[in-house]
Length: 202
Image (cartoon, rainbow, N blue to C red; front, side, top):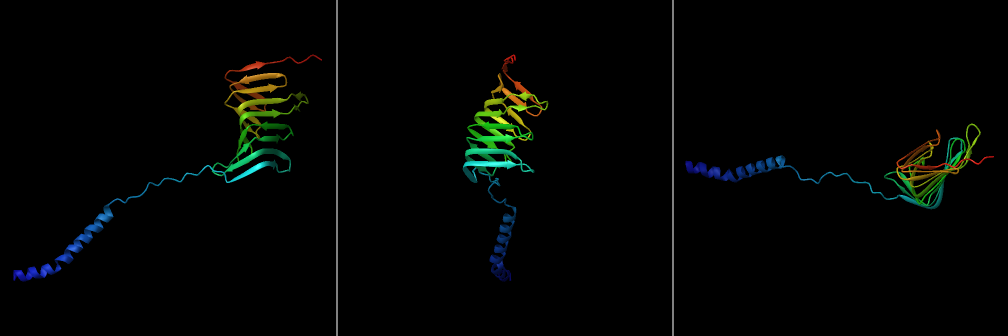
């Protein structure tokens, strides 16, 4: 009788073992951590999406008045930063009073709307002689340096590098500069030197 029961059990033993193994495999699959590559964000490449050669770009205000004109031998637009890099730029900018400011450099980096331009290498910003609100003339104003940061809308020029400022016959130098053309306030810091030439007597 015992042998008969064992014979019947031996018939189902392979099925029972396969069921146990299947359950064990399922348990291992549920509890073993999966292998995956780290989820690293894809970095945007700093490549231009279009270029311009020997170009001119003009901007106007809502009334159609010319605000600025940018010339360059070559320009490259970078979509990841929405900036325009310009070789040998020449920028002409007019404020609301019609005063002209001209900027040149070896290279320039402009934001999307052209309101902020960084001038790199042999940078020069020149404001033409104008008459002030009181009708008195103000002399030509010129900034020179290896780096000048111009804000065309707010009429400011800044630099964290040495600059030379020429105002008429006067000359100033400093290690850093912040000039506000609206308030006519100049802030020179670091090693500052100035040369004031007395006005000629009539």
